[in-house]
Length: 610
Image (cartoon, rainbow, N blue to C red; front, side, top):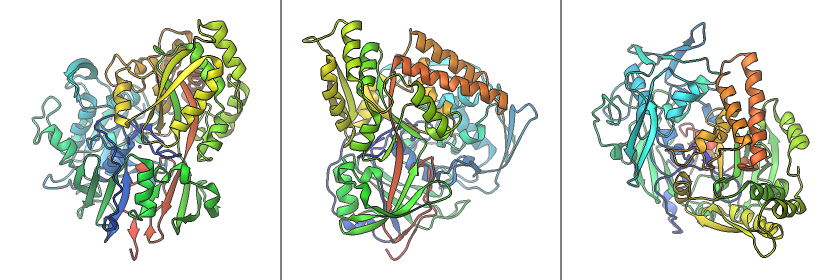
């Protein structure tokens, strides 16, 4: 999603302050600007943190990082990215095997894994039910993970339902009884794919695949439901993770408590508490001036108060992470961790609202390197592709070489004269008759409004009048899904570490806001470049096997999609994220990896002499 206020948890992302917290899709919102000075929040053996607006605690519905970071503590899938590193490991799974044709996975479960409360032991029936919900429920935002990405064998049907706004929507789900996920024994599950897929185990680590008790909610055929859906999603989520649900008050706070019967390493803290804020300055006051947290992240230290010169005594570990100190900040020096994450931030254009010459003119007006340096204070890297450097075909060097040699709008330069000429020659607009559109940024960010204003001022000479507006994050996403945005800022962080996880956002059919649950809000269709992107995506889907030949074809198609996006400027790539953590010295917390902190479980965090 990505998912951080809140696609993404995985993945639309948001940058609160100047770096990026991940962001995402919809649900409840509202800014809470109350400066809570209660220093008792970080007392005892409770880990105290800050979060953004959450939307749900249902693993199959959550797409925002704020929800996802809490879901990560409550629910366990079969696989996991330990401490958000990108090497997938077993969690509830004990072992797995793959058929000779690479189409059938057999997964054996640990015995004795317990659900929270009185829901007993995790068995194969629970896994089958959970994955069927992901593929069949009207509440699922990630059905395509099963049906398209992994490509589990199934038959489809179209269902119509009434959404939370009282509107009818259609969605494609698996037909009951058709999904090829089967119980083979009490602790054994078999999953059959249409074709081999290169990242199956990596995808099973995503929290959408988390296991919940069989039949707990009745939103698929054959499940009556032991509790109402709204109760499960907001008041009583039941999982098998290291923490059990404590409380969630929308726009105020959330809390999880240590699960004593956890099958893995039991939590070293008694509970984890998140205070929910959207305003970046309020987050700073709570975290640093009042010292109400144990760990702060980049979104809690807005760029306006951030000084890269305060990073000192640094070293680089074997994964390229920067370790050192940061300070002083409000009289304290904190432990510092800087991690280049697998994520991208961008300006998205609704192609129905903003014509191609205008989109190209905006691209000519943008110098990504200047924006990263002057506005984001180097908390990231300029981006020219949507696929991050670490997973770009050929790696970071090939990423840079392809961009330097081929990016059509000026690599590390702005070209305002070209922008002006383009508008004058290819549109009806000009001096005294500017094209007007609105760029919507999320309200909690202190940096995206500055980016918008910088671009707005430059575009005036190109006969473009861009209005910059702020909206609560969930409002932005709700409007986007309905096609009611002209241009917007968002981001995406990996669900699994492969380019197709990112480039699915540029697959034209999934950008259609007249359909249910579009992944992006660009309505990209009817152009040569959109056809190129569609054909390239089809090539990716026809070459999913974990073989050298299929990898070569996928890599060619990944680059073709990136170049199609350049042609039509559907996404204007802006920067790749540098994730930062600031930890008070009484905290012993494992370092996280490229999947970002929202994928880290907090059971190994220890508080010393708090």
